[in-house]
Image (tube, rainbow, N blue to C red):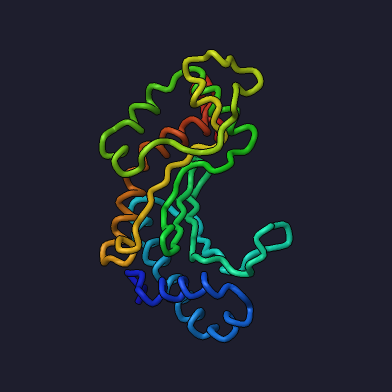
Length: 226
């Protein structure tokens, strides 16, 4: 049976790891890590079942706790978190879901982190034409209450080939198109946390539908998948 909640022991382990992020301590507590890791994987599996009731998920990826320190200034060997991503199935379903569990810094995120070059240009061309449908979706009261504003890295000025005076330049400058929702530790440890995540991801669907439509058609609205 899959775990339906995140327990206090999971966060207690992560808090201890944060204070003792070294290989000796981790080796001494490997049994506890294995137990918490399996429980968290089970929770992510439960969330997969909830998501699959209203979306088609191609892949669940649970990230390893071990950090790649080769090219990082931060040389601590372990992450202070458990996290997972969910990839939507099929070329006509764009976007993805992400869950990050960390004491004091838990959040979920969704959207388009780093669109490839052609996708990014297609999105920008769409915003150059019209952002009214996008704004209608992201300014809907319930959507805005749950997800807040559209975020992500952006250029300081207009991308090459675009007018910096364009009325939609604030959207055109973006390189990422992401929504994030933060959770307190108490919310993460509550009995309805999985349902709250699932409800939040349901609310994002109109945004995904719009972006999927944009990324699978040309500017004339003709399908690129045929």
